Length: 106
Figure 1 (cartoon, rainbow, N blue to C red):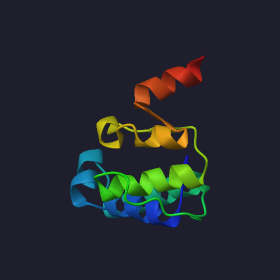
Figure 2 (figure 1 turned 90 degrees about the horizontal axis):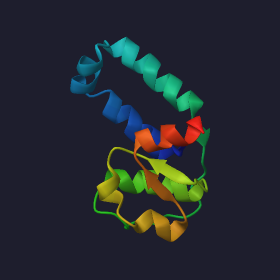
Figure 3 (figure 1 turned 120 degrees about the horizontal axis):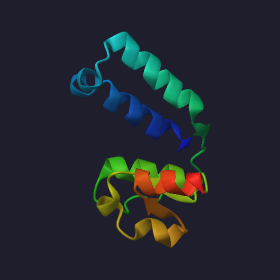
Figure 4 (figure 1 turned 135 degrees about the vertical axis):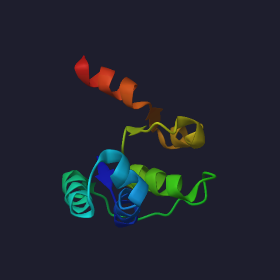
């Protein structure tokens, strides 16, 4: 998993929304622990080039930018349709989580 500063901050802001913590059954402190753990697992990416705008959702731009700058092979997301064919211009596949898991099994 790759993340630059902008993407890590976006993940944190999203995870800290009350509806997400509530849906996961976590209180605010537990959400903070979760966010810290996810960010600690991420491989840091320095952003040397901004590729915006490429996509219609600015939140997705952050994911694409980290993937391109980090030379990722794939973006794994439930949100495949919003990425369209743009990542392929950079040699990056867009996979559903189930498809990514199947690839790790073989």
